[in-house]
Image (tube, rainbow, N blue to C red; front, side, top):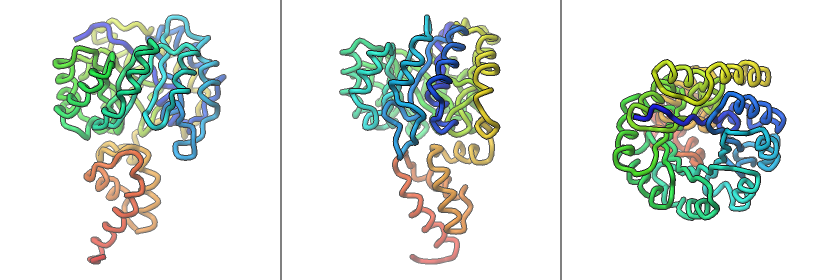
Length: 341
């Protein structure tokens, strides 16, 4: 168990989901300045779905990757700069741009069973001299043994660390312990953990991950992020310090970054809440992008959207399969009325 965990702030990446990707470069610079002053270890900057994510499919961001990096990079002294790349969304040109703008780390994310699509990306990031971290999204959807198999592929490809990603906020502490402990015992590289708070367990799960051998933990100021948000990083830093961990970020500095810098940029609707929608997503184990479509289908078929989401979780849907929702709703509606179609 590490006593000096590395803390990664995701406010300017995962937090973009909470503001419909509308942080301006100036706002990003202000947040980055505050986090750097608070001695944050790493901050990540990009569209919520990574470099290249600004699109009709994923949401148009307020500015492009270059503008965001130009705004943030000059504000960082000791804090490292990370970018996110999803194979099939981000391009090599954007990765080269990030390197030219001063990125230190590239995190390469795939679905938990699709690590094999990341080999070329890891090899290129290694060739360019950046730290390369692998993210296994929706890790709750695979057994600990499968998560290990996929992590071992990323290690083989050149990853410096692999993350267990609780992308839907669906894990309870035992789920986290089972996966993180196995990776920590079998891999020769670092293990990280990324929590979402849909079941109210982001801080508890982060502690469980550290206790089982994770050395890097993610969070966001005020808990911004998809669904009900990420681990609230000012809470995370405070809890870790009280628990005896030697953390680099300053507790009061991170509090000030949240309260004085970030909060004035937000409105009441932006603040993450653990409401019934978020809870259902965590309970069902479904990513937040399905919620809006499930609501629409529920209205059309006179169903409870929670029924649709739970069924989608049983099927094991992943991002990009939103078209399945109509088929599921149609089937549930027929079953409820005794139809045979």
